[in-house]
Amino acid sequence: MNIKNLVKTFGSLRAVDGLSFEVREGEIYGLLGPNGAGKTTTIRIMMGLLNPDSGSVDVYGHNPVEESYEVKKKVGYVPETQLLYDSLTPQELFEFVASVRGLPFIKTSARVNKLVRALDFSKYYSQMILTLSAGSRQKAMLIIAMLHAPRLLILDEPFSGLDVRSTRIMKSVLQQHSQDGGSVLFSTHVMEVAEDLCDRVGIIDEGKLVAEGALDELKLQASQEKASLEQVFLRLTHQEDEVKEGVEVLRGAFSESE
Image 1: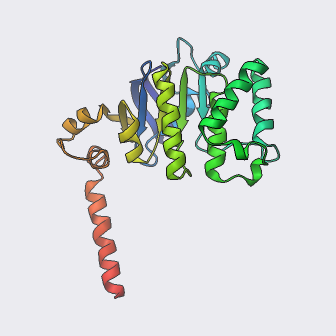
Image 2 (image 1 turned 180 degrees about the vertical axis):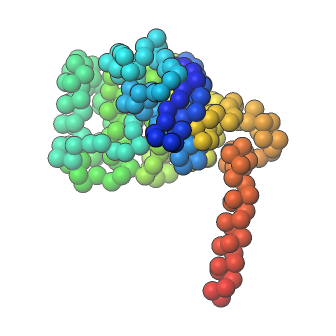
């Protein structure tokens, strides 16, 4: 999957500004950036939900705007906002999605059963989606994304709302997908997850790619060889001083209240 010189504006706002990167076969790629950096806009363009002003997106030889159907056959997508039919059970929803995609019943049922077991989702399988927690709904979204055995998973904040156990399970599922030759692109604000999971990371700020590489390469770019990904991220996005200032303001506020 390749993005080249991608540009997207909304009025006077340049949300994506000449962005270029690629996700390789069998790779887990983390797309990191501050709020408003352009991560979700980029992902929506990749899925054909937004048209870019200029630049190109190539998903296994297909343009997501002109060949949306072909892209969706090869990609599993979990958006930042959970979009589920609350009046259905997960089982009913999985069967509905499978029928819309024209997936073979026996093969898809076997895959659903494996995913349900892997994500420890069996006890929620027949419950109304309306009653599920945010973490359980997120698991349902991931199962839907993986129903058709996609080559590429595109996940926007996939660990949002998950507890520690569920996060560990989801990380294992993504690692297995990568080991099987699939690729993963995900955005996250959880630096510890990205540090533990990603083969490479792209950091964007104000719509531009400001750094890219494995963690060791990012540390060299930030001149912080012994730093955590969080520290590297703050330096490369020029937020260190803002964080220090915020901490000092809070300290002062607490001191005044004593």
